[in-house]
Image (cartoon, rainbow over the protein chains, first blue to last red):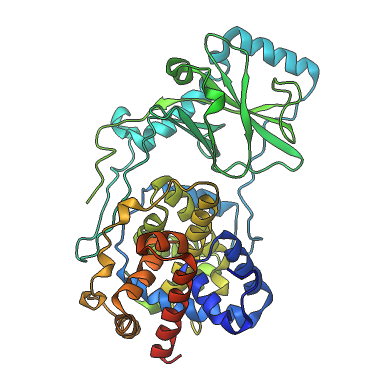
Length: 287
Length: 181
Protein backbone atom coordinates (compact mmCIF):
# COMPACT_ATOMS: atom_id res chain seq x y z
CA UNK A 1 0.00 0.00 0.00
CA UNK A 2 1.32 3.39 -0.90
CA UNK A 3 1.68 6.06 1.72
CA UNK A 4 -0.04 8.69 -0.40
CA UNK A 5 -2.85 7.90 -2.75
CA UNK A 6 -2.07 8.52 -6.38
CA UNK A 7 -3.80 11.81 -7.13
CA UNK A 8 -5.67 10.31 -10.06
CA UNK A 9 -7.33 7.78 -7.81
CA UNK A 10 -8.86 10.24 -5.40
CA UNK A 11 -12.25 9.01 -6.49
CA UNK A 12 -11.26 5.44 -5.65
CA UNK A 13 -10.13 6.64 -2.24
CA UNK A 14 -13.45 8.44 -1.70
CA UNK A 15 -15.34 5.36 -2.87
CA UNK A 16 -13.45 3.03 -0.56
CA UNK A 17 -13.88 5.46 2.32
CA UNK A 18 -17.64 5.33 1.84
CA UNK A 19 -17.66 1.59 1.25
CA UNK A 20 -15.72 1.22 4.51
CA UNK A 21 -12.73 -0.84 3.41
CA UNK A 22 -10.02 1.66 4.39
CA UNK A 23 -8.07 0.85 7.54
CA UNK A 24 -8.12 3.17 10.56
CA UNK A 25 -5.15 5.26 9.44
CA UNK A 26 -6.47 5.60 5.89
CA UNK A 27 -9.85 6.61 7.29
CA UNK A 28 -8.22 9.35 9.34
CA UNK A 29 -6.42 10.60 6.25
CA UNK A 30 -9.62 10.58 4.21
CA UNK A 31 -11.42 12.48 6.98
CA UNK A 32 -8.67 15.08 7.01
CA UNK A 33 -9.11 15.44 3.25
CA UNK A 34 -12.87 15.83 3.60
CA UNK A 35 -12.28 18.68 6.01
CA UNK A 36 -9.64 20.41 3.88
CA UNK A 37 -10.51 19.64 0.26
CA UNK A 38 -14.04 20.48 -0.85
CA UNK A 39 -13.52 18.64 -4.12
CA UNK A 40 -12.76 15.45 -2.24
CA UNK A 41 -15.68 16.09 0.11
CA UNK A 42 -17.96 16.34 -2.94
CA UNK A 43 -16.67 12.99 -4.19
CA UNK A 44 -17.41 11.43 -0.81
CA UNK A 45 -20.92 12.86 -0.77
CA UNK A 46 -21.55 11.55 -4.27
CA UNK A 47 -20.48 8.06 -3.20
CA UNK A 48 -22.58 8.26 -0.05
CA UNK A 49 -25.55 8.99 -2.23
CA UNK A 50 -24.74 6.26 -4.77
CA UNK A 51 -24.07 3.47 -2.28
CA UNK A 52 -26.56 4.76 0.29
CA UNK A 53 -29.36 3.39 -1.88
CA UNK A 54 -28.26 -0.05 -0.73
CA UNK A 55 -29.49 0.81 2.74
CA UNK A 56 -33.00 0.00 1.51
CA UNK A 57 -31.90 -3.62 1.65
CA UNK A 58 -30.81 -3.53 5.28
CA UNK A 59 -32.98 -5.63 7.54
CA UNK A 60 -34.37 -3.48 10.31
CA UNK A 61 -33.73 -4.47 13.90
CA UNK A 62 -35.65 -2.76 16.68
CA UNK A 63 -33.19 -1.19 19.14
CA UNK A 64 -33.70 -1.54 22.90
CA UNK A 65 -35.95 1.24 24.24
CA UNK A 66 -33.39 2.58 26.70
CA UNK A 67 -31.32 3.96 23.82
CA UNK A 68 -33.96 6.60 23.19
CA UNK A 69 -34.07 7.45 26.90
CA UNK A 70 -30.32 8.09 26.86
CA UNK A 71 -30.49 10.14 23.68
CA UNK A 72 -33.33 12.23 25.11
CA UNK A 73 -31.41 12.83 28.33
CA UNK A 74 -28.38 14.03 26.35
CA UNK A 75 -30.48 16.35 24.16
CA UNK A 76 -31.28 18.63 27.05
CA UNK A 77 -27.63 19.47 27.40
CA UNK A 78 -26.90 19.63 23.69
CA UNK A 79 -29.09 21.98 21.62
CA UNK A 80 -28.64 21.80 17.84
CA UNK A 81 -26.51 24.92 17.88
CA UNK A 82 -24.11 23.43 20.40
CA UNK A 83 -20.50 22.72 19.57
CA UNK A 84 -19.94 19.23 18.23
CA UNK A 85 -18.77 16.85 20.87
CA UNK A 86 -20.49 18.61 23.71
CA UNK A 87 -21.86 16.22 26.27
CA UNK A 88 -24.13 16.56 29.22
CA UNK A 89 -22.22 18.19 32.04
CA UNK A 90 -21.76 15.84 34.96
CA UNK A 91 -20.39 17.65 37.91
CA UNK A 92 -18.52 15.66 40.46
CA UNK A 93 -19.58 15.93 44.06
CA UNK A 94 -17.79 18.76 45.86
CA UNK A 95 -14.07 18.94 45.33
CA UNK A 96 -12.77 18.07 48.73
CA UNK A 97 -9.19 17.00 48.57
CA UNK A 98 -8.09 17.94 52.05
CA UNK A 99 -6.24 15.37 54.08
CA UNK A 100 -8.88 15.44 56.78
CA UNK A 101 -11.61 14.57 54.34
CA UNK A 102 -9.50 11.80 52.92
CA UNK A 103 -8.84 10.36 56.37
CA UNK A 104 -12.51 10.52 57.23
CA UNK A 105 -13.39 8.83 54.01
CA UNK A 106 -10.80 6.14 54.44
CA UNK A 107 -12.00 5.43 57.99
CA UNK A 108 -15.54 5.20 56.74
CA UNK A 109 -14.59 2.84 53.97
CA UNK A 110 -12.62 0.64 56.30
CA UNK A 111 -15.38 0.54 58.88
CA UNK A 112 -18.41 -0.13 56.79
CA UNK A 113 -17.73 -0.13 53.12
CA UNK A 114 -21.08 -1.28 51.93
CA UNK A 115 -22.95 1.21 54.07
CA UNK A 116 -21.15 4.17 52.55
CA UNK A 117 -22.48 3.33 49.15
CA UNK A 118 -25.73 1.64 50.01
CA UNK A 119 -27.96 4.36 48.61
CA UNK A 120 -26.04 4.81 45.42
CA UNK A 121 -25.75 1.09 44.93
CA UNK A 122 -29.44 0.59 45.47
CA UNK A 123 -30.13 3.25 42.89
CA UNK A 124 -27.80 1.72 40.39
CA UNK A 125 -29.45 -1.60 41.10
CA UNK A 126 -32.87 -0.31 40.14
CA UNK A 127 -31.60 1.12 36.92
CA UNK A 128 -29.85 -2.05 35.91
CA UNK A 129 -32.74 -4.26 36.88
CA UNK A 130 -35.12 -2.07 34.90
CA UNK A 131 -32.93 -2.58 31.87
CA UNK A 132 -32.28 -6.23 32.14
CA UNK A 133 -34.68 -8.00 34.45
CA UNK A 134 -38.00 -6.15 34.56
CA UNK A 135 -39.78 -9.15 36.03
CA UNK A 136 -37.87 -8.62 39.27
CA UNK A 137 -39.48 -5.22 39.85
CA UNK A 138 -42.87 -4.36 41.32
CA UNK A 139 -45.43 -3.89 38.56
CA UNK A 140 -45.61 -0.11 38.77
CA UNK A 141 -41.85 0.23 38.25
CA UNK A 142 -41.67 -2.05 35.27
CA UNK A 143 -40.77 -0.54 31.94
CA UNK A 144 -42.66 -1.52 28.85
CA UNK A 145 -41.86 -5.02 27.77
CA UNK A 146 -38.82 -5.05 25.57
CA UNK A 147 -39.88 -6.23 22.16
CA UNK A 148 -37.48 -7.26 19.48
CA UNK A 149 -39.19 -6.75 16.16
CA UNK A 150 -37.36 -8.18 13.22
CA UNK A 151 -38.78 -7.69 9.77
CA UNK A 152 -39.28 -10.97 8.01
CA UNK A 153 -40.48 -9.61 4.71
CA UNK A 154 -37.02 -9.64 3.17
CA UNK A 155 -34.88 -12.60 2.35
CA UNK A 156 -31.59 -11.17 3.59
CA UNK A 157 -30.24 -13.20 6.48
CA UNK A 158 -29.02 -10.90 9.21
CA UNK A 159 -26.92 -12.62 11.81
CA UNK A 160 -28.08 -10.85 14.94
CA UNK A 161 -25.18 -11.22 17.32
CA UNK A 162 -26.05 -13.03 20.48
CA UNK A 163 -26.12 -10.64 23.43
CA UNK A 164 -22.83 -10.28 25.19
CA UNK A 165 -22.27 -13.01 27.75
CA UNK A 166 -22.07 -10.57 30.64
CA UNK A 167 -23.54 -12.10 33.72
CA UNK A 168 -22.96 -9.11 35.96
CA UNK A 169 -23.37 -5.41 35.48
CA UNK A 170 -22.80 -2.36 37.64
CA UNK A 171 -23.75 1.18 36.80
CA UNK A 172 -21.62 3.66 38.67
CA UNK A 173 -23.64 6.82 39.04
CA UNK A 174 -24.98 9.36 41.45
CA UNK A 175 -28.59 9.32 40.34
CA UNK A 176 -30.76 7.91 37.61
CA UNK A 177 -30.33 10.94 35.37
CA UNK A 178 -26.57 10.87 35.29
CA UNK A 179 -25.23 7.57 34.07
CA UNK A 180 -21.50 7.63 34.30
CA UNK A 181 -19.70 4.33 34.00
CA UNK A 182 -20.96 0.93 33.06
CA UNK A 183 -19.07 -2.11 34.34
CA UNK A 184 -19.81 -5.50 32.90
CA UNK A 185 -18.23 -8.59 34.34
CA UNK A 186 -18.00 -11.74 32.31
CA UNK A 187 -17.67 -14.54 34.82
CA UNK A 188 -16.68 -17.17 32.27
CA UNK A 189 -13.73 -15.20 30.98
CA UNK A 190 -13.00 -13.40 34.24
CA UNK A 191 -12.85 -10.07 32.48
CA UNK A 192 -14.44 -6.78 33.45
CA UNK A 193 -15.21 -4.18 30.83
CA UNK A 194 -15.53 -0.52 31.72
CA UNK A 195 -17.43 1.88 29.52
CA UNK A 196 -17.85 5.60 29.99
CA UNK A 197 -21.51 6.33 29.38
CA UNK A 198 -22.04 9.95 30.26
CA UNK A 199 -19.19 11.09 32.47
CA UNK A 200 -17.40 14.18 31.28
CA UNK A 201 -13.64 13.93 31.11
CA UNK A 202 -12.19 16.33 33.64
CA UNK A 203 -9.47 18.59 32.32
CA UNK A 204 -6.22 17.80 34.07
CA UNK A 205 -7.82 14.98 36.07
CA UNK A 206 -8.31 11.27 35.65
CA UNK A 207 -11.08 8.97 36.79
CA UNK A 208 -9.74 5.98 38.67
CA UNK A 209 -11.71 2.81 39.33
CA UNK A 210 -11.41 1.05 42.70
CA UNK A 211 -12.58 -2.27 44.05
CA UNK A 212 -13.48 -2.44 47.74
CA UNK A 213 -13.85 -6.05 48.79
CA UNK A 214 -16.16 -6.84 51.69
CA UNK A 215 -13.42 -8.90 53.38
CA UNK A 216 -10.60 -6.42 52.79
CA UNK A 217 -12.07 -2.94 52.73
CA UNK A 218 -8.93 -1.19 51.55
CA UNK A 219 -9.67 0.23 48.12
CA UNK A 220 -7.49 -1.36 45.42
CA UNK A 221 -7.03 0.33 42.09
CA UNK A 222 -8.40 -1.38 39.00
CA UNK A 223 -6.96 1.28 36.74
CA UNK A 224 -7.48 4.72 35.31
CA UNK A 225 -10.55 5.08 33.10
CA UNK A 226 -9.83 6.70 29.76
CA UNK A 227 -12.26 7.79 27.08
CA UNK A 228 -12.28 4.41 25.41
CA UNK A 229 -13.84 1.22 26.65
CA UNK A 230 -11.23 -0.91 28.37
CA UNK A 231 -10.99 -4.36 29.84
CA UNK A 232 -9.61 -5.39 33.20
CA UNK A 233 -8.25 -8.87 33.55
CA UNK A 234 -4.89 -8.82 35.27
CA UNK A 235 -5.96 -6.74 38.27
CA UNK A 236 -8.89 -9.07 38.89
CA UNK A 237 -6.78 -12.22 38.88
CA UNK A 238 -6.16 -11.93 42.63
CA UNK A 239 -9.88 -12.00 43.48
CA UNK A 240 -12.21 -14.98 43.45
CA UNK A 241 -15.62 -14.70 41.80
CA UNK A 242 -17.48 -14.31 45.11
CA UNK A 243 -15.27 -11.36 46.10
CA UNK A 244 -15.73 -9.69 42.73
CA UNK A 245 -19.47 -10.15 42.91
CA UNK A 246 -19.88 -8.80 46.42
CA UNK A 247 -17.38 -5.95 46.22
CA UNK A 248 -18.24 -2.28 45.94
CA UNK A 249 -16.86 -0.40 42.97
CA UNK A 250 -16.00 3.27 43.24
CA UNK A 251 -14.65 5.97 40.97
CA UNK A 252 -12.57 8.81 42.34
CA UNK A 253 -11.14 11.90 40.70
CA UNK A 254 -7.36 11.76 40.70
CA UNK A 255 -4.44 13.63 39.18
CA UNK A 256 -3.76 12.71 35.55
CA UNK A 257 -2.52 9.13 35.37
CA UNK A 258 -4.08 8.06 38.63
CA UNK A 259 -3.56 8.29 42.35
CA UNK A 260 0.09 8.81 43.29
CA UNK A 261 -0.38 7.01 46.62
CA UNK A 262 -2.15 3.84 45.58
CA UNK A 263 -5.22 4.92 47.54
CA UNK A 264 -7.97 7.34 46.51
CA UNK A 265 -6.85 10.93 47.07
CA UNK A 266 -9.65 12.82 45.35
CA UNK A 267 -13.42 12.85 45.87
CA UNK A 268 -15.31 9.63 45.26
CA UNK A 269 -17.89 10.60 42.69
CA UNK A 270 -19.50 7.33 41.70
CA UNK A 271 -20.11 4.01 43.42
CA UNK A 272 -22.01 0.82 42.71
CA UNK A 273 -22.17 -2.93 43.07
CA UNK A 274 -22.42 -5.70 40.56
CA UNK A 275 -25.81 -7.16 39.89
CA UNK A 276 -26.46 -10.50 38.32
CA UNK A 277 -28.14 -10.10 34.99
CA UNK A 278 -29.14 -13.41 33.56
CA UNK A 279 -32.88 -12.92 33.36
CA UNK A 280 -34.77 -15.62 31.50
CA UNK A 281 -35.30 -14.86 27.86
CA UNK A 282 -32.55 -12.28 27.56
CA UNK A 283 -30.63 -14.51 25.24
CA UNK A 284 -33.50 -15.48 23.01
CA UNK A 285 -33.90 -12.49 20.74
CA UNK A 286 -33.12 -14.18 17.48
CA UNK A 287 -35.78 -13.89 14.85
CA UNK B 1 -41.10 4.42 7.21
CA UNK B 2 -42.12 7.95 6.28
CA UNK B 3 -41.74 9.26 2.75
CA UNK B 4 -38.51 11.05 1.86
CA UNK B 5 -40.39 14.37 1.74
CA UNK B 6 -41.76 13.83 5.23
CA UNK B 7 -38.25 13.03 6.46
CA UNK B 8 -36.92 16.21 4.82
CA UNK B 9 -39.57 18.16 6.71
CA UNK B 10 -38.66 16.48 9.98
CA UNK B 11 -34.95 17.21 9.51
CA UNK B 12 -35.76 20.87 8.84
CA UNK B 13 -37.78 21.02 12.06
CA UNK B 14 -35.01 19.23 13.98
CA UNK B 15 -32.54 21.83 12.71
CA UNK B 16 -34.68 24.43 14.50
CA UNK B 17 -34.54 22.46 17.74
CA UNK B 18 -37.94 20.73 17.52
CA UNK B 19 -37.66 17.78 19.90
CA UNK B 20 -41.02 16.35 18.87
CA UNK B 21 -39.85 16.20 15.27
CA UNK B 22 -36.63 14.56 16.43
CA UNK B 23 -38.59 11.90 18.28
CA UNK B 24 -40.65 11.19 15.15
CA UNK B 25 -37.47 11.07 13.09
CA UNK B 26 -35.99 8.60 15.56
CA UNK B 27 -39.12 6.45 15.52
CA UNK B 28 -39.10 6.37 11.73
CA UNK B 29 -35.44 5.51 11.28
CA UNK B 30 -34.15 3.79 14.43
CA UNK B 31 -34.72 0.19 13.31
CA UNK B 32 -33.04 0.77 9.96
CA UNK B 33 -29.97 2.40 11.51
CA UNK B 34 -29.80 -0.12 14.35
CA UNK B 35 -29.91 -3.01 11.88
CA UNK B 36 -27.14 -1.31 9.95
CA UNK B 37 -24.74 -0.64 12.85
CA UNK B 38 -25.46 -3.99 14.51
CA UNK B 39 -24.53 -5.75 11.30
CA UNK B 40 -21.21 -3.95 11.13
CA UNK B 41 -20.34 -4.04 14.85
CA UNK B 42 -21.82 -7.48 15.65
CA UNK B 43 -22.13 -6.53 19.32
CA UNK B 44 -25.25 -5.05 20.84
CA UNK B 45 -23.32 -3.05 23.44
CA UNK B 46 -21.27 -1.31 20.74
CA UNK B 47 -24.32 -0.85 18.55
CA UNK B 48 -26.21 0.78 21.44
CA UNK B 49 -23.34 3.16 22.03
CA UNK B 50 -23.02 4.07 18.36
CA UNK B 51 -26.78 4.68 18.08
CA UNK B 52 -26.57 7.34 20.77
CA UNK B 53 -23.62 9.04 19.09
CA UNK B 54 -25.29 8.88 15.71
CA UNK B 55 -28.59 10.43 16.79
CA UNK B 56 -26.89 13.13 18.81
CA UNK B 57 -24.86 13.95 15.73
CA UNK B 58 -28.06 14.03 13.62
CA UNK B 59 -29.63 16.31 16.23
CA UNK B 60 -26.68 18.68 16.15
CA UNK B 61 -26.04 18.69 12.41
CA UNK B 62 -29.56 18.53 10.99
CA UNK B 63 -29.00 22.08 9.74
CA UNK B 64 -26.22 20.80 7.48
CA UNK B 65 -28.51 18.40 5.66
CA UNK B 66 -29.01 19.54 2.06
CA UNK B 67 -31.80 17.79 0.16
CA UNK B 68 -30.04 18.64 -3.11
CA UNK B 69 -26.99 16.60 -2.13
CA UNK B 70 -28.51 13.62 -0.34
CA UNK B 71 -31.76 11.98 0.63
CA UNK B 72 -32.54 12.00 4.36
CA UNK B 73 -31.90 8.28 4.56
CA UNK B 74 -28.60 8.25 2.64
CA UNK B 75 -27.47 11.20 4.78
CA UNK B 76 -28.35 9.49 8.07
CA UNK B 77 -27.03 6.15 6.88
CA UNK B 78 -23.70 7.79 6.02
CA UNK B 79 -23.46 9.21 9.54
CA UNK B 80 -24.27 5.84 11.10
CA UNK B 81 -21.94 3.82 8.87
CA UNK B 82 -19.08 6.26 9.39
CA UNK B 83 -19.39 6.08 13.15
CA UNK B 84 -19.68 2.29 13.17
CA UNK B 85 -16.78 1.86 10.74
CA UNK B 86 -14.55 4.24 12.68
CA UNK B 87 -15.16 2.14 15.78
CA UNK B 88 -14.75 -1.24 14.15
CA UNK B 89 -11.55 -0.23 12.34
CA UNK B 90 -10.08 1.27 15.52
CA UNK B 91 -10.90 -1.91 17.41
CA UNK B 92 -9.35 -4.18 14.83
CA UNK B 93 -6.08 -2.32 15.18
CA UNK B 94 -5.66 -3.77 18.62
CA UNK B 95 -7.49 -7.07 18.29
CA UNK B 96 -8.05 -9.58 15.57
CA UNK B 97 -10.47 -11.66 17.57
CA UNK B 98 -13.48 -10.28 15.74
CA UNK B 99 -13.04 -12.41 12.67
CA UNK B 100 -16.36 -12.55 10.95
CA UNK B 101 -16.59 -16.32 11.07
CA UNK B 102 -20.28 -16.11 11.85
CA UNK B 103 -20.81 -14.21 8.62
CA UNK B 104 -19.36 -16.83 6.34
CA UNK B 105 -22.64 -17.70 4.73
CA UNK B 106 -23.58 -14.39 3.21
CA UNK B 107 -26.87 -14.29 1.43
CA UNK B 108 -26.06 -10.96 -0.25
CA UNK B 109 -23.96 -13.07 -2.55
CA UNK B 110 -27.19 -14.16 -4.12
CA UNK B 111 -28.61 -12.11 -6.94
CA UNK B 112 -29.55 -8.75 -5.44
CA UNK B 113 -32.06 -8.17 -8.18
CA UNK B 114 -34.36 -10.61 -6.47
CA UNK B 115 -35.05 -8.04 -3.78
CA UNK B 116 -38.13 -5.94 -3.87
CA UNK B 117 -38.99 -2.53 -2.42
CA UNK B 118 -36.70 -0.79 -4.82
CA UNK B 119 -36.57 2.84 -5.69
CA UNK B 120 -35.53 3.83 -9.19
CA UNK B 121 -32.05 4.79 -7.92
CA UNK B 122 -31.65 1.50 -6.10
CA UNK B 123 -32.85 -0.40 -9.15
CA UNK B 124 -30.19 1.33 -11.29
CA UNK B 125 -27.50 0.62 -8.71
CA UNK B 126 -28.47 -3.03 -8.53
CA UNK B 127 -28.37 -3.33 -12.31
CA UNK B 128 -24.83 -1.93 -12.25
CA UNK B 129 -23.76 -4.22 -9.40
CA UNK B 130 -25.28 -7.13 -11.23
CA UNK B 131 -23.07 -6.33 -14.21
CA UNK B 132 -20.00 -7.07 -12.06
CA UNK B 133 -18.57 -10.56 -11.86
CA UNK B 134 -20.20 -12.54 -9.09
CA UNK B 135 -17.12 -12.46 -6.87
CA UNK B 136 -16.57 -8.72 -7.29
CA UNK B 137 -20.19 -7.99 -6.51
CA UNK B 138 -19.94 -10.15 -3.43
CA UNK B 139 -16.82 -8.25 -2.36
CA UNK B 140 -18.58 -4.89 -2.58
CA UNK B 141 -21.71 -6.09 -0.81
CA UNK B 142 -19.81 -7.79 2.02
CA UNK B 143 -17.92 -4.56 2.56
CA UNK B 144 -21.04 -2.43 2.46
CA UNK B 145 -23.33 -4.54 4.64
CA UNK B 146 -20.89 -6.44 6.81
CA UNK B 147 -18.23 -3.77 7.27
CA UNK B 148 -15.53 -6.14 6.01
CA UNK B 149 -12.04 -4.65 5.85
CA UNK B 150 -9.67 -5.36 2.96
CA UNK B 151 -7.86 -7.85 5.21
CA UNK B 152 -11.06 -9.69 6.04
CA UNK B 153 -12.03 -9.75 2.39
CA UNK B 154 -8.56 -10.98 1.46
CA UNK B 155 -8.93 -13.83 3.94
CA UNK B 156 -12.39 -14.73 2.71
CA UNK B 157 -11.46 -14.64 -0.96
CA UNK B 158 -7.96 -16.10 -0.44
CA UNK B 159 -6.34 -13.21 -2.30
CA UNK B 160 -3.57 -10.76 -1.41
CA UNK B 161 -4.74 -7.54 0.25
CA UNK B 162 -3.43 -5.41 -2.59
CA UNK B 163 -5.34 -7.48 -5.10
CA UNK B 164 -8.49 -6.95 -3.07
CA UNK B 165 -7.81 -3.22 -3.13
CA UNK B 166 -7.44 -3.28 -6.91
CA UNK B 167 -10.63 -5.32 -7.29
CA UNK B 168 -12.54 -2.95 -5.04
CA UNK B 169 -11.40 0.17 -6.85
CA UNK B 170 -12.05 -1.25 -10.30
CA UNK B 171 -15.46 -2.54 -9.27
CA UNK B 172 -16.44 0.80 -7.78
CA UNK B 173 -15.17 2.69 -10.83
CA UNK B 174 -17.24 0.42 -13.05
CA UNK B 175 -20.30 1.00 -10.90
CA UNK B 176 -19.80 4.75 -11.23
CA UNK B 177 -19.42 4.55 -15.00
CA UNK B 178 -22.47 2.34 -15.25
CA UNK B 179 -24.52 4.82 -13.21
CA UNK B 180 -23.28 7.51 -15.56
CA UNK B 181 -22.47 10.03 -12.87
